[in-house]
Length: 139
Image (cartoon, rainbow, N blue to C red):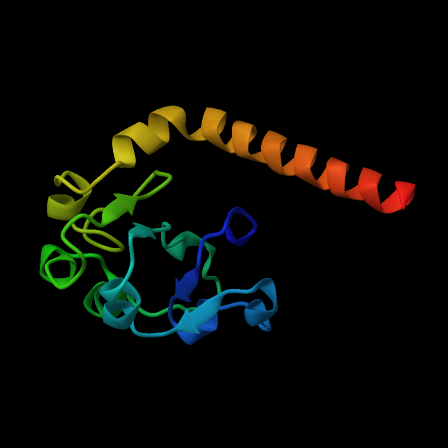
């Protein structure tokens, strides 16, 4: 997304933030309210508790309390913020049903069109990279 000009802020519990992610030109915060404050869009990802064999992730209730996108949190964000989630989603864990089904949500459209859009973006990025490599070798 940064290659397409987006300013990206990653927000999650510290255990879920990859080391040195800042090298990917993204900002990191552990405060979801701070992350939402100036955001034009939020792309929520599914908490995959089933992959937590070491019980290192925050418990579901703790995660919901500290990181879930709720209507209360969204009311503090820009009025026209776009809410996205690639699906499947865990209602009541990373996102409330009220937000998932709300007026700011593009989740159904994203799930319907997600693969085609990602393919188109990757195609455009690949073309751009090919042009850059072609220009580098000809100079």
